[in-house]
Length: 119
Image 1: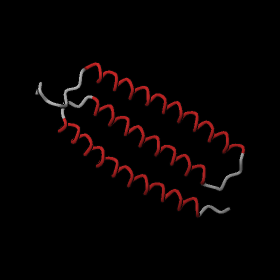
Image 2: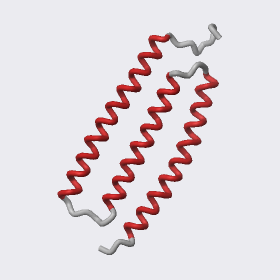
Image 3: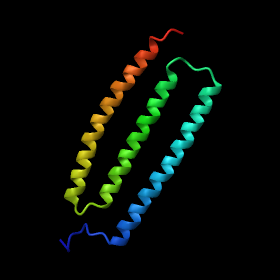
Image 4: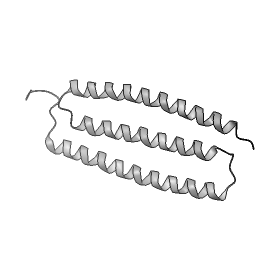
């Protein structure tokens, strides 16, 4: 396997891994600020009943999906060959499809619930 075209120097792997970690931390900081801003806005503006729950769910779903992508990137950096990369990608796609279906179902339920709240 030493002649594999996929061999990546350990220094480059370390750099890539650190870059993923930094991007994850930056994203977490951004999400914290966005959630704080959304909370401030919601407390100062009269909103449609149920809209707060819907926006919180949407933000949480987005955060979960981005974290899954970061997890994939971290695993891909550590992959030993192209076959492992393909397996990781395939597992990610299957997992995300299931996650998106569950999120859509939950969001639909939340929207339906908020539509029945009397105004």
